[in-house]
Image (cartoon, rainbow, N blue to C red; front, side, top):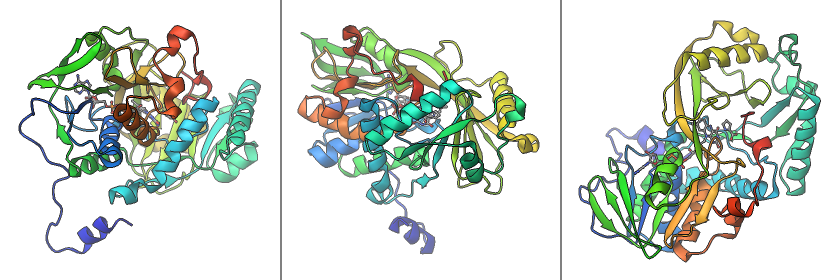
Length: 413
Ligand code: FAD
Ligand code: PYC
């Protein structure tokens, strides 16, 4: 248990300082500017200052930290991907997650639950077997299991799914976990702030200066900043930012919605995902069911919620768990998923010197927050792509060297 929590619990006064400073003035120049105060931008700031000694950095956030997809996701953490590039990358992230609460001295409620991806057709059983074999080859704990194994871990599930799409097997991934998403942004933000990084909320980047194919500064809603390095980590806003530097964007933005139930006594230990039913669900420490489905089926730059989504997802949930019919939905929301053609991220250097990209995280980027921070910090500090991200560069679309992750991205999109 983090020491800070114990001190807080036993103290008679209110011992907590604010999580991070709110500097009232922007400086006229920084060694690096990070656009986007989501988990990825803040993690990069944290590792730049902690591991590379760079602390004359500004993180610029148009809203408040964690207000983008970082604070809107369903917090599933796993490394059971399909491609060798993906498996190695996400595995590093799962390793980093293990120590984060201690690193930050902040409880992230990281909870390892095991992760079942259900297969309801012969074709998806084949895909699960394929994923299990690739995973095992890289030392990842994944295996194909029988319906009885699913039932043993989750006796409440109707394996027949109302007789429509019976469960034929599942990919089981023991390290599958969940965590508290806002705390991840706060932990990275506080750690970066303590090392001198400035976090400027309510500060929007409205232009990026480039001279002779090299970045020289950014224009913000609060004034101009000169800088030789800009890291762009803005998720659903990436196409807008790429326009500012005249780079073509392979990213298309779809809303991704989610919802949460009233709290219930604990009954669901593992994380359950069904691609065929378009459902994923886990139960939080507070007892709520956090649920999601696939992307809204059209491009839209908006984070509105729809009744159609809540109705559709509730119906699919009841196929798996008919006993939930009396349970109330208390909240729903949406984020803007920055999707790529191959369902893999875009990371690293770009044709503009000093302009680095961390994007294309669509529906799968929360779990990657620590490894993205580490590898992007290395890339920015050394002006050299970290070896773990070499296959994710923007120019792979020109070279037709895609990293096909659709079969493992999340639910069937
Ligand atoms: P964000 O958190 O979106 O941060 C980007 C920030 O940039 C925002 O705060 C935004 O305000 C800011 N910004 C944008 N434009 C500007 C500008 N011009 N100037 C300044 N600031 C700007 N991933 C998983 O791994 N597991 C899951 O279970 C999962 N579930 C999901 C469920 C939903 C409903 C959604 C929407 C996403 C889910 N994801 C999941 C994906 C994951 O949430 C994202 O990939 C990840 O959080 C991206 O983090 P980020 O820091 O890159 O982006
Ligand atoms: O990446 O595991 C995932 C995920 C689940 C729901 C959305 N993304």
